Image 1: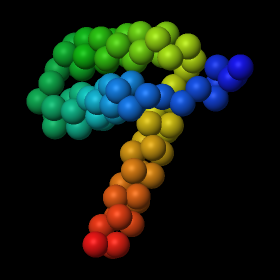
Image 2 (image 1 turned 135 degrees about the vertical axis):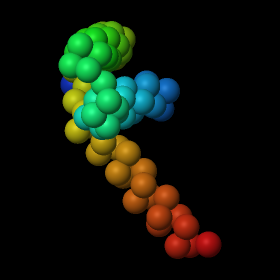
Image 3 (image 1 turned 180 degrees about the vertical axis):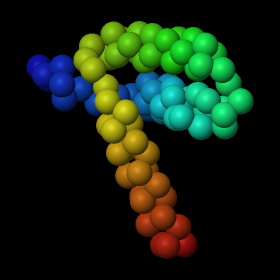
Length: 85
């Protein structure tokens, strides 16, 4: 039986985490300086809750670094595949 910490995310769950990570980026939270602190705090609270809900489905904590690492690995792999063409 796999340890919870070693569970690999499905592509669907990874994409949901990736979407949330993008929305949590400062430029998106602050809408390039156009959002009020209240709006930012509301978005941050809502997005953080969605992240925690996904973690509950996965059965473990998921770091933003884990999501970004997979994004980077996919990017590198796409580059390698394009070189073969």
